[in-house]
Image (cartoon, rainbow, N blue to C red):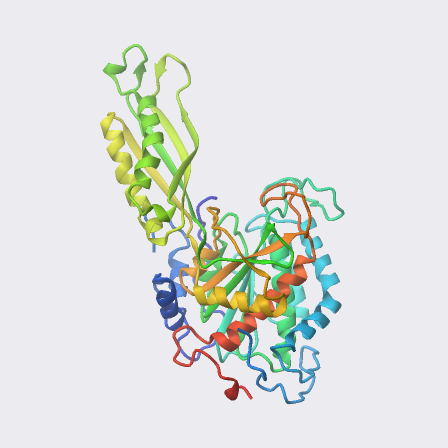
Length: 501
């Protein structure tokens, strides 16, 4: 991963963000996050998004009640062309509605996914992808808002009053060659959807189209905001969404990520850290240089660099709680050009990964102090460039339970399975720095298959029946959060069925 880039324009509240009540991501949402995870948001969500657009060294800145409102009323056909049926959501009613929706849309959505797969676009170049999403949402009577850079968007569904839940998809591809022999193979040389972002996008789109029907029938007690985020792999896209006001007023955020280790129909859940922080470090060591015959008359730079490379990871791991899984791993070390000359400079590049938020915030300062200590012992100068990548993604317990309840409702009681932590980076963590939420792992492996696929490989693919599964989970989770979740920190957090009839 590389550092973030500064998005053009100022952070602003989107046109469709409600003006009533202070909903800037700091009040109820912030309080709930602090209480349930122990993580204090860095100012308001909008302010954090603007402040963190260019982080550098040391910069830290259950489903609904049995009867939904309006469900007993027969309404006129909405502007979106949906004729409400008066069928209530929740319990046994949601499943047949999802069945009917998917029967009419699943094939089309699969084709949509294949279209994205054939035309992958790298981070901040997702213009065609963005346009395709805009077209589908606009055709459903929605008003998507494209981000200032021109790629990525967000779109609100449902009334402004009540809680707001975000469903996030990342839309960018990877700089890898597609090695699959399938009709929907990438047509772009060296670019492929090898992390499942095309599937993420299709699932959030499908969930949005279903929820738009429910909103038109007056069956949503709040808003659902669809976040189609650019540049997750770069990373930086999450910060662009935040800077554009994309999570202002949002009370909880949810995301699914493809997991080829889990079978279709299963959902991997974990409370607490699920992915790690991932930063890049660049160390440069300089000295006077000299002849290898006389190392005592100069600074033996290669030896000093070797000490830095071996001692820094060990020392760093002893400065933090071992449970933080803080690790420094080098990926490139270089010095000198000939065997009999001590060079005057050398470099080491690597990554710092961490599952603990506090240790992540402390890492740059600790590493700088340790580096200077080792360098001084060998009379060389050492400089550190520490580039922030992404924070750890820390799943809030209540949000994980909402995923679990929703999956039990639409997939069955045995659908939710434990999933291990990963030291891979995921910039969904930026959202969870400000608001509570959860990332779940969606099974995409054909049940009983012995094929071994992994993310970020040219042969990566999914069992496309996972699309319908993901749509079911996202819809049910959003409805669970809207009906039962309320706003974190509100006195009336749980909406009673008696007030919904």
